[in-house]
Image 1 (tube, rainbow, N blue to C red):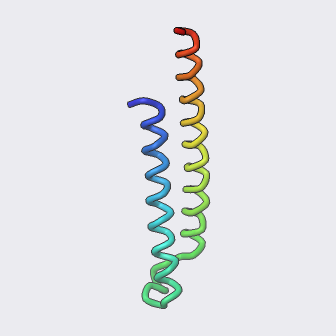
Image 2: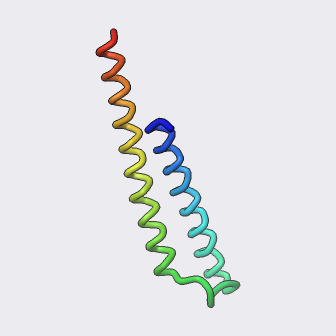
Length: 75
């Protein structure tokens, strides 16, 4: 698996975790799942996903820079 593919998989995973946390937070607001949703846990999930997303974007940029540097050496 290439570095860019790995970074993209990480971004998609982080986005899925954000969607899941947002869904749980929205349910809490309606009172449907008030007993089972911990807002602090969901806030931690959102922050963790944000950091994971930023790290994967950085990894993708570095992989792109490395690829460009390799192509520059060949040309």
